[in-house]
Image 1 (cartoon, rainbow, N blue to C red):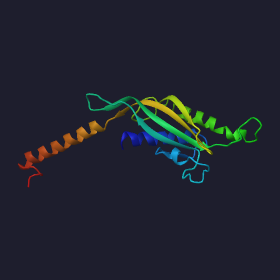
Image 2 (image 1 turned 135 degrees about the vertical axis):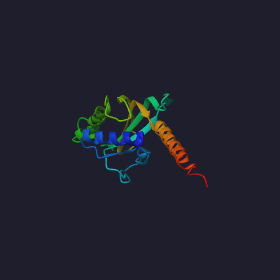
Image 3 (image 1 turned 45 degrees about the vertical axis):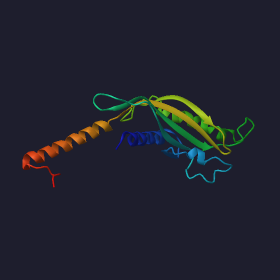
Image 4 (image 1 turned 90 degrees about the vertical axis):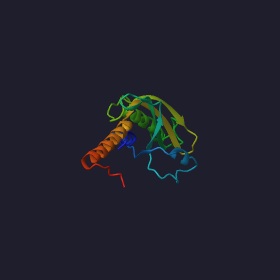
Length: 180
């Protein structure tokens, strides 16, 4: 399992355990854009939902073939239904602003978290509100962490093992398996 898969599954598990009422955690693939419109009838996800995007960062390679990024960015898209009547006279105000507490819960679940296999401490760095919708509200929450990707090292070790196996065949039999 690669570092991205492991990181996604670890974040998904943490968010579902720590954020009350969160119904869906999935990889981001433009779901917010699909949900623009006047109704929520075409939404294939149960809301509220968090969609995780691996935004990236600058990568470096250490001498032992470990690729790392000092500030790899993860963007979470928190999407929920929004209610129109949220003013102080509305009976719906509590439900209408409930998503604000959910945003805090998402931020608190990941900010300063050190439970990832391939990443250091996760830090919250900012948010953006996309309110260009009729019945949906989307908060984009950015986090970053130092991430390491050992796949180059794994690839190098696999190549070394293959070369060693070929050399052993030549020594034992006098010919390589790959000779015709």
